[in-house]
Length: 378
Image (tube, rainbow, N blue to C red; front, side, top):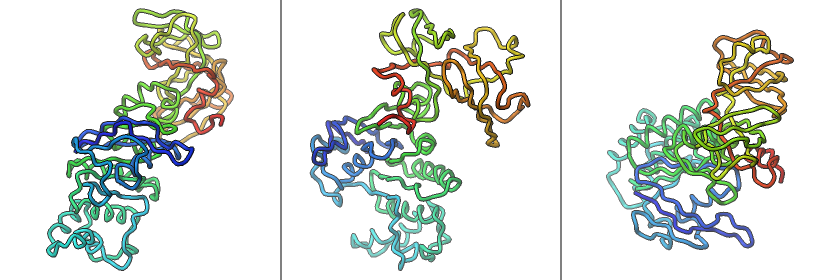
């Protein structure tokens, strides 16, 4: 079922939680609303569910306006972070509860089907307190799906789980969505969670959608500093455009020339304009300064000094002080570690110019660089 929001907004007194929003969620998709606390994502979900009334605009399901329908008359179900399972009922009866409330007497087959879907058929007679957090989450999913909703809304459903279990449940949720084939709308503040599961992600900021697209598109081609920083990590530096036009642009950052594809520059940018230049940490290689002559020609390069080296098992994360940025982040996969890459070492940072992107610097480039990091000035 396709969901359309046209001009939907929500105000609470003088505060605007969601600015006028136009959004289309395709039928059968796994759609994520991603953002920090207070960005309006949960309010948007609650308006789709009918738990909040929009201050303006319309909500349509397959072209039918449901804006005025109460929650129980909408073909949607919601799974919350607090699973709200009935402690006195076993798994089977928790899942059957909604069907019985609708007056259905024969529910055994439907419940069994849902429990098999979430791989809990063998635990049908256990009580919630006898289940792990992940198992309780799957019971809540089965209870929602057994009612055959056309849309399933998920409000931070994995937030109470530990990291390892959360990653396991991300795969489970995606598998279940693929099998049932209905529209999932998932609210989360966890970037990894959104990228792992969703077909499309809407990054929200201050009640507006900052950027909308497939996870890979948002990550590789952010259009704002907020998206570049919030969806993963980016190194952003102030630069001046020295040449534009053709297939490649040239900029200068703290005296160092850098190149990037013209298609990845802000529209309308020309020579003499300011720009923020960005590159993801995992795109960068580190070479000891003594081996600088071995850096391949045509690479973007900066010189610097390692200030921190953190061993994380699968990777080593470095912070490098450079003239362009005091804390340039570099992630290197733990394959063949160079023992010379330690704190205090002089190094050359280098990367493919194609992995560089440009963003509008805004009126306050320093503030813009911090957008989405959690450290931006209030």
